[in-house]
Image 1 (cartoon, rainbow, N blue to C red):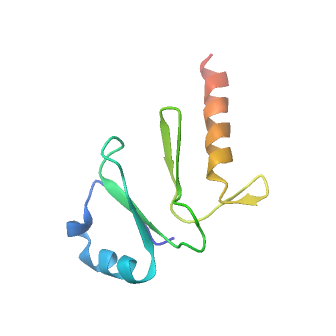
Image 2 (cartoon, rainbow, N blue to C red):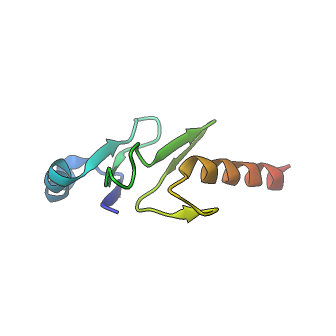
Length: 89
């Protein structure tokens, strides 16, 4: 994990931004999900640690193992959505 920053922009975290530019990848949130950014290691996340499924957006900071797979954010997101749909019905 490098960092998950909510409700702030790069001006508020200059040291983190400088390090991220050298050693990491930064994904700045689209305005429709809010203000923030996640700084991550490209070797852990070949694509960004963000998944948007239907109207839901999932952002991960760090890494995880789910159902024996590392960083499978799409499967985790789908399972959370499906479980919530079953509970809400």
